[in-house]
Length: 342
Ligand SMILES: NC(=O)c1ccc[n+]([C@@H]2O[C@H](COP(=O)([O-])OP(=O)(O)OC[C@H]3O[C@@H](n4cnc5c(N)ncnc54)[C@H](O)[C@@H]3O)[C@@H](O)[C@H]2O)c1
View 1 (cartoon, rainbow, N blue to C red):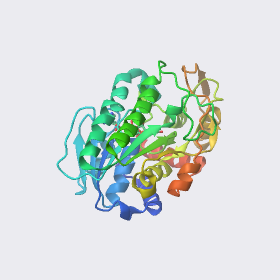
View 2: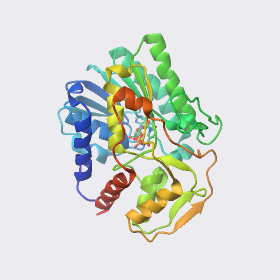
View 3: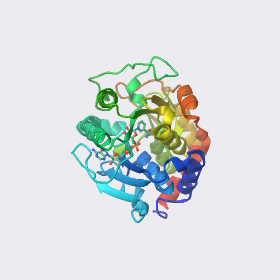
View 4: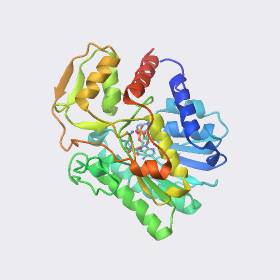
């Protein structure tokens, strides 16, 4: 495995986020990041540590990796707590912001760990909100585009109420996230908590795991293409997604967490360029100069046919917009994968 995980592409990405995000607002703040050893959580921890915030990263390593945060362990403004957020936990130090990311998030995990996913977004958010209440901290919840289900309004605005199957194979995730949002609203109504909900649309980039059950579409295609193995498409590939590069996503999440104007808001964060899964497979094949065949497998039940966010609210409220083109983001991800395997 090449170098440590704080390699060139990640370092460069963190610098880019720091240029766009006003790091002064984070300096000296005490921030709890649940799920901080995961893909998005570890990028957030990196930016916050570099911004001189005091970071408590909480994770149970169910889908996160020690390698994602090992380079931060010696930093005096970084503390790691191994804990399952569905179990109560108390902190003596002050906490100014709670960012609740802890939850497995891959469709393959929906099948294997539905109960843990439900718990992370129900019991887990209840514990996390309790911490925010006790410390009078701001609260950011990472919800998902999945709460819209198989959306009939494209592009999808925050007003859309969703088309979700409560008893389908994805319900452990989409209904749990809907319940999580409901918890956030309840704590806001009953206790006046300062809350923010991010509805994240498909995000990709370095530190996503490709292998096995974690195989989300972009890292899975990249790994298959790099090893010249068949690229596996579920369905005929005409279903669409809109892919956001990790630096754009993390910048959006941090702006939402810190902006004074964003209190109480629910905001879509993602890239609004829509692409079919077949086009994505062909693009990755071309960028990796792969000889992989494209293989078609049955479409899983309730797989949404189209996904494209309306991001006007994020642009207006946060002064944010995605900057990284898909081709550029994929090139960085491919380079990172190659380096990791070296
Ligand atoms: N990446 C995306 O495209 C995307 C899209 C929509 C929503 N999200 C949301 O963003 C958040 C982070 O996603 P990610 O892509 O970084 O996934 P990830 O699986 O890489 O990270 C999740 C982290 O949460 C930890 N975790 C899970 N359950 C836990 C528990 N009970 N207690 C403590 N830690 C626990 C895992 O170990 C892991 O480190 C999730 O809430 C996910 O639903 C992500």
